[in-house]
Structure formats: structure tokens, C-alpha cells
Length: 322
Image 1 (cartoon, rainbow, N blue to C red):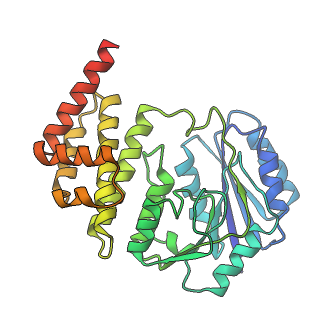
Image 2 (tube, helix red, strand yellow; image 1 turned 90 degrees about the vertical axis):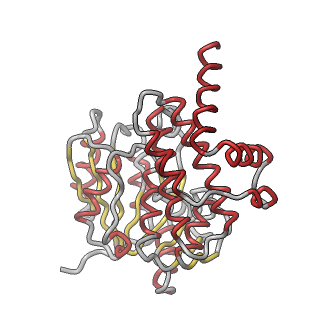
């Protein structure tokens, strides 16, 4: 049976006051060859009933009701049944701001067969109407946020998900983790478009607004995943490797400070220590802040492990005194 051109995946959890606006913005699209997969992730409010009402009115809408398992599991369940040639995501408290968003950006994918992902405005990316081709260029664009770390401002050829799913056990930065895996899965090119619009709603109770110790650890884990891929990829500049090493190392120390009882940090430190270390010559490279240069000098003098233990111990003592 012939499937739709586009599968739109919307995980739904406790969004009763926002969900109607989200679905209506999809129904308003001038591009109509789509299926909408609403995943009711065990929502305790009336969100599931809203999903069912829309599905009863439009045969293009399918609903999955499942026990709560988190946004990654919800998206993965939908990916397993998606039939579209293209895949996109919308968060259930957000909405599309232009009725031509899907039509204009799918046209880009159909015009340029070498492009596997198109990103449209909404994710704070920069450099509109630019193509990033090849793994090195894509990873460096993710580091610089020219390609945003979100899934919801992009349309994907379904092939990029053949060996890729969102990571289990990650509550924060899981979108970026997934994009890193896509880059490692032979994505040929990402096109950053200036067409369409996605409106991201910032809520006081959202995961981004309520940053936890676990999310701090997840942010480091994603950064280490990206740093590892940068280091094994030919064509990535030494400046990018060094600056992102510093970002990742600092995130490890931050995660260690707020997750003092987790036993995995020595393993992560060992992982950082096995990567090619920045050299003193990088102190003169562009792109490093003064603070990063001072850290780099201290790391070269003391070593990755010793500096980490000294810094974390110092910060914890200050916190205890405060």
C-alpha cells in the first residue's frame, strides 16, 4: 500500500492546554500528503482524549496509547510504525508558524537528492540557505550550532533512521545524540533553509527550564559522544577538537560536582584521558577564551585526572562553606 510522503511524530504528555494549537497548526499546512502519529505517553491529563478526538475526525491521524516511558521511547515507538518517505517531529506544546513550512522544505529535499536533512527556522541555527556536506562539516556545524541540536526543526529522509534511534536512558540532549549518530550513519548533506517557521514554547516546567543533576550528566555524556566522533573523523579542524575538548571536560567536572556519589566519573576521566590531548601550541589558536587558555595550561601542567580532582575538590569545599 502506498504510504504518505511525510510522517509527523508528536509525543504527548501533560500538554492539555497546548495540544489543540499544535495539531491545528499541522492541519493548516498547505502540504497535505502526511500522516500524524500522536503518541500518548501515559499522559495523566486529558491529552489522550484530545488525540482520540482528532483521530476520529481525520483518517491521516493515528494514535498510540502507551505507559509513560519518556520522549525518546515515544518517538522510537512512532518511528517503528512510520510509513512516510520523510520524517519530522513536533513537540506537543509547540506549533508551526507558517502554513507552507512542510511544503517548501520538502520541495528542497525533492530538488536536491543528495540532501538527507533539511533544517528550517526555529532552532536558533544560523547561516540560512547553506549546505553542510560530509561527516566532518556536519559535526563541526553541530558544534557551532549552525546545525541546531534539535530534531523538531528538521525534516529527514527516512533512510537516516534505518540504523538510528534515540538513545535510551538519556533525559537531556537526546536530540543532539541522535543527530551525532546520523552523521556517523553516512548522512550526505544537511541543508539549512530560510523557509517556514517553527515556534518553540519556553515553559517554566519544561525539561530545559528545570535543569537537574541527571540532565547535567546527560549533557556531558552527549558532549563526550560528540567529542569522540570529532576525534575519529578526518577533516575536522584541530581548533574544533581543542575547543570542544575544553567544553566537554568542563561539563564532566560540572556533572561530577553535582553528582558526587556516582561511581562512573573515573571511567569518564579515563575516557577523556585516552583522547589526543591538546598541546601547548593550541594556546595561540583562535576560538579559545582566556579562561579556556588558562585551563588548558593547567591541564598540561597537572594532567587531566589531577586537575579534575583538584578543581572538583576546591569547588565542593567552597560550596560546603557557603
